[in-house]
Image 1 (tube, rainbow, N blue to C red):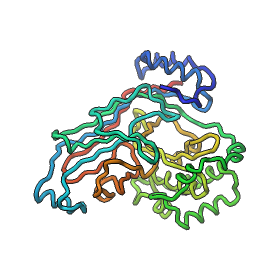
Image 2: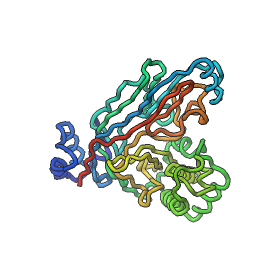
Image 3: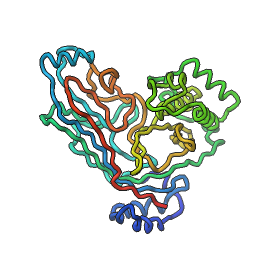
Length: 366
């Protein structure tokens, strides 16, 4: 595995290896882990701190699969707005666990059973795994993935003057893709007016992003689940969960001309494996940097308690059936809104679906 170049700069911390070896949370690191940990800790920059060594498992279970036939199939199809003659089918997608600047795999994840297909999505380059259990004969079907990674607290070192000076050097494709309006991130007149009033005396893009973050923090009230997904509802109610906070922050940044996108995953420590999403903004010198609009200290900071699973909203999916929409599945127009554990489209099948997230091993190094 190649290490992220931005990590390779300063201050050896080899004492951490000794602490890890004595940790009550874990046995000693294996030889592969020791080699990688020495390399990472020896060259760790000041932006990255508090490395955490994690072994995890994600599983999806489909039990008591019953394929409908005859009148029962027609009745089910009609109830879901699907043509009567549509044959039963079951589609499952999941984004693969991979490297990000704050998340480095120690080895490739193990996946059982192997997916029927894997592909890179055309918008965000997520590595998507796809299974079609309806092609199988089992009445029970389970997907299990195991993985090991190191994650860090990340607080990027930002030179505001340099970022502002180079702002016009942001690639045009980044501007076009990540400042546009799209589903769930609509840019209506009321929100545009709110952004312009908030930022009228601020010219520096980072200060603008921080003002937006502070406004979202002060204006929103956390409520789960939200009445409806999307930035329109977030602005109208000023209530919602992490997805609504993120949608509002991203859309306001986009209106201001600051590229923004979503990052999805989980809090992933033994005491908390809850689903979570946050945002990233793009800076011309630094690149993508994190902003968690739900957290009090979330501006330009990401903690080491995350498992990142995907990037972006409205993620395109291959093999999406033509009948799928958000009324009968988690896919519409061959896209899913975002992806954490898995995405499902099913017709003409009765089954019990469940998923589990397990932190097998978590060692935070002082």
